[in-house]
Length: 119
Image 1 (cartoon, one colour):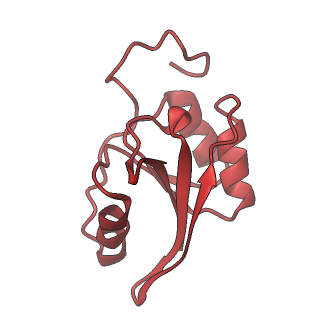
Image 2 (image 1 turned 180 degrees about the vertical axis):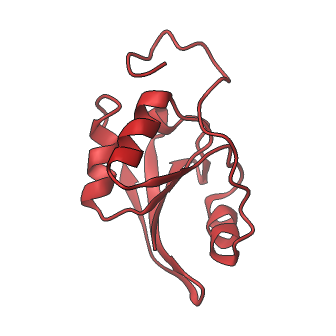
């Protein structure tokens, strides 16, 4: 399974669209391989999901995320796991072992004036 984690300074980013980048990895029961960091290409709530889909991502792990981005990820066949936090390595390990908590998606931790996509 190919996973992308919204990343900020080695931690899960609090907001998908504002994350400086994404850590991608192949995660199987046997291990975590092909770990790569990709800069956020910017754009609207369609650009990042399309980029991740183009990379073959199956799961996006995020802290918070707006409704438009969730819809666009899901439309591209990408499962969204929200409310994640902590070091990216620990989150990938929790995903690998099946112990990651599949929290709510959506962002309610800040004002949405900067969103124009499915507030």
